[in-house]
Length: 263
Image 1 (tube, rainbow, N blue to C red):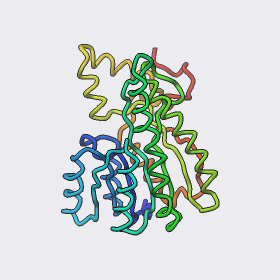
Image 2: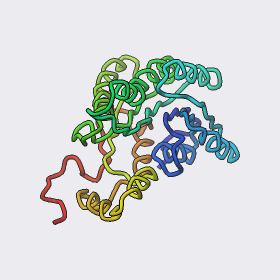
Image 3: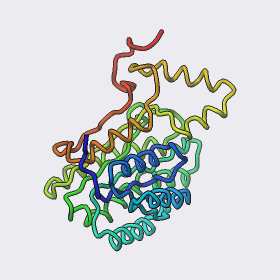
Image 4: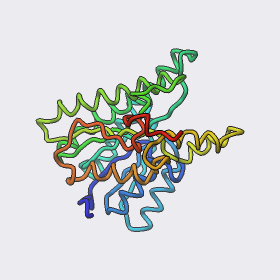
């Protein structure tokens, strides 16, 4: 299916993670659709990712940005404006499950909010004039932690809960501008970072199987490619009448009846 994303300027925050991470996979999928990916992230891996795409003839750029710093976010949007003068879609993807729990300092909790929630607000605020030029749209990447809790990660849980609140709020605010805003919610996805976490355990494979057994559809984790496909469909005109929605790409993990679980 042609999603009509060719030559669309799509900004993805936190997209310079390890190869195969959700953000990086979204960027590669955008490139395959002929879009213009803009990587906004603090990790310098983004330099190499942008160069790889440029060598393929894709007008991709990387803007090194500490997304916990609103001033750097404002500068990043100015760079996008100077180069492209528009933005067709914003995917607020940055997120770090940093374990800032009740035993953490107030400073650690506040930093978690800055990175995982305030960055979404700042990026959207500064990008809004560019999105209004194109009747673009916003997709916020959420987490099941906002709905289910996880334990020992108050900052991340509060942030992701806030992201869902902002999604509905912005959908209301931006109706008059023809700008859609949705959230895509992820549960268990087999990313390189997830695998690294499993590798720290003596019983990592058993832990992985225990998690997979709790995912009703296929007893497997969601792939980053499946998440990227859902993202691209949502930001495309194929999803032109969808706004204010929480879209779960989770194999039924959050909502389906527990009786479906493997014994």
